[in-house]
Image (cartoon, rainbow, N blue to C red; front, side, top):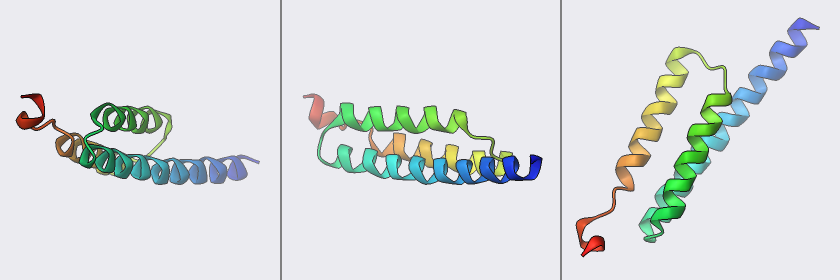
Length: 82
């Protein structure tokens, strides 16, 4: 039973990572269209889902780098604020 539970947890974590990556892609797409609030919301969802995972430290660091990259990609350009 414990093995089955561990396998289910591992699959859930893998599925969450897929959802996180999709949400980060969505964030970049929203930013490209100038929909900054939607872009930020997508990143927040990705961060929330990351908290639910039980990833190794290396996997977690990789996902956190992806989140940081998405954050950098959605920085609002000065021209949009003028």
